[in-house]
Length: 148
Image (cartoon, rainbow, N blue to C red; front, top):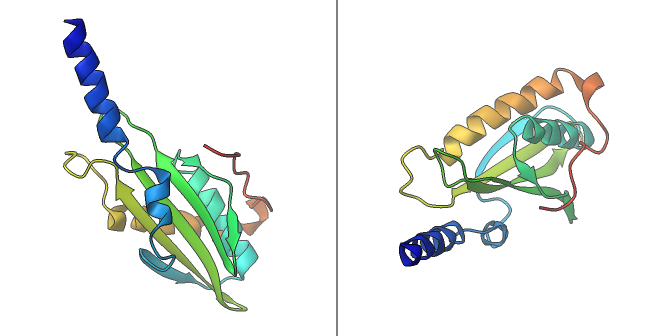
């Protein structure tokens, strides 16, 4: 009985380790689903952070990579999913337009209730739009927690 339990736990850990936050780091920053917003870079970055907080994700502090602002995230394992990992990239197109790109991967592709990248992006971009409509509520640092 103990051997079966140990084997089951080991198999679960192996499956959850298939995708780590590092696996998303290897993808080019422009890979994913992108949308342009008619707002300056700083306001859009704050709205992007607020939208991530709205989705109950574990967030990594934002990184500034050249002119790109990058936030990586993960959704933990729950009763219906092995979780997802992802990244949001915010980059200024011009003074009044900012592009937000979302990339999401499922930890275990065959999971029955997995969310697709397009489904996540549609909901997330809606949350960014909602935050942009209420700029007085945005916090300068987005309120992200440190590390994983």
